[in-house]
Length: 145
Image (tube, rainbow, N blue to C red; front, side):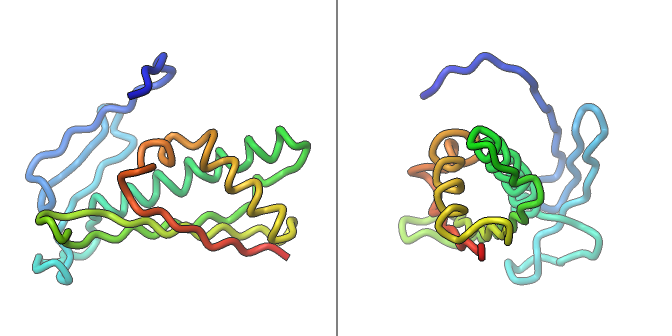
């Protein structure tokens, strides 16, 4: 396990699990949760799931990592569109697991150039990618020119 020198820490508290409420200590995130109907829950309107939050965080983090790598190559990927889909499902061994599909779009790059930047961001920079590697199936779709 990698040791880190913390730069920033976000803290959140959740009460009631998947049918409860989660909020960060600074109140920047304040959400009600509900199990979706597809998973046998009530699927209450205007609620989120942990998968929504993970997908949002991973998409934003990966977009930042991609732009950082691009800048290191004297390029700009600040307008890259990163769409992260997080699926939850049952495991053969019991319990549940996640799978991630990332779609990266930037018409300012050829597909080959964008693939190279995405690979580097995924392997070297993005902490979500580091955390999921070997634990969650992460696949990429790259859309360039």
